[in-house]
Length: 408
Ligand code: SF4
Image 1 (cartoon, helix red, strand yellow):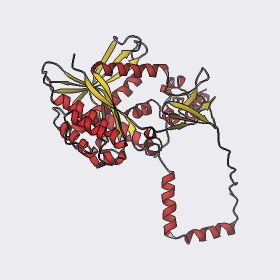
Image 2: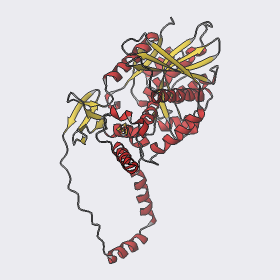
Image 3: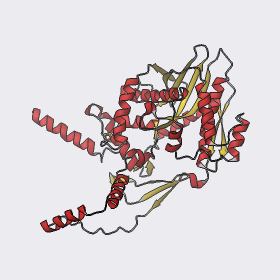
Image 4: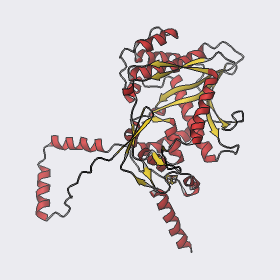
């Protein structure tokens, strides 16, 4: 058993905790209430009195249209440009509207499962459950159990230490410190007959210089000093011992492939510093708070004053890592008996990942509408919280009936 590693978690002042807003759906109908969740406390707000919209005129006569066209010609360029900017602001795409320009790796897994469902989750994250309670759609018992098993596994080799942060830069300073520590531990590992293991390491980047920027947490990284190989392991919990469906395994493999590509790009120094600070909206030269600087000092990293210093140190250390091709594995664990494990190792399929990213990009950048599941994947709809309101499902079912009628 290794000596336990320390993993830091940031405690933010209340004002840095983002409130979450949503309208619940009851029986497939969006409710006028707004639910706000702040620091785990849910409050329900009543609707504001509705504004009466003036009817829009749509029956112009010819003279009015000519006058309108003439006016249009005379509009100064400055006003037209302003209008154009306004239009662009309004045309906000899912990437910025729901994710502020950064995707989590699990967003891609959800997208592969059903893009339409993912869109509904953004629009209606609260639903009425069978017990008549308004709940977050992802707060299901098996999901909460999965989170708790993840934590148990993390605590097998790590101790969590909370650090008070004053700014967003502080909290990102903690994330970078966790990465720096994990990599430094690997570089200084001197037990040549034992693998080095670290868990819950943050990662980020835009793979293959793509337009999508990712952040995520790698469940486990193993380094084998005998073979000089790194391995990324994704940890998944199962409610039963049955083999996961190929579609489930596929989404898990994609997740692992994304993590190992992000890790390889970090090791190869293929990370754009300016882009990192831009995407996370961080000020690189702000001096970090004393609580953060003390922690860096205590860990032996004494030259750090700003987030930029921390970032540079991370890149320097990652560059010294002994390998640039990372293997991948998924470890399935039974929820009722965590000693039952099923491990799958697999090869990397870079072309498949690149193609998938190109397809995903279209949705996130607002170039195409969300797509639901294909007819052969219709089994997914059985468990979907949005099946009663899903327009995609309705269209597919009508299409199917039309085809059937034509055949008969
Ligand atoms: S009902 Fe089916 S197609 Fe519609 S969102 Fe749910 S899983 Fe996707």
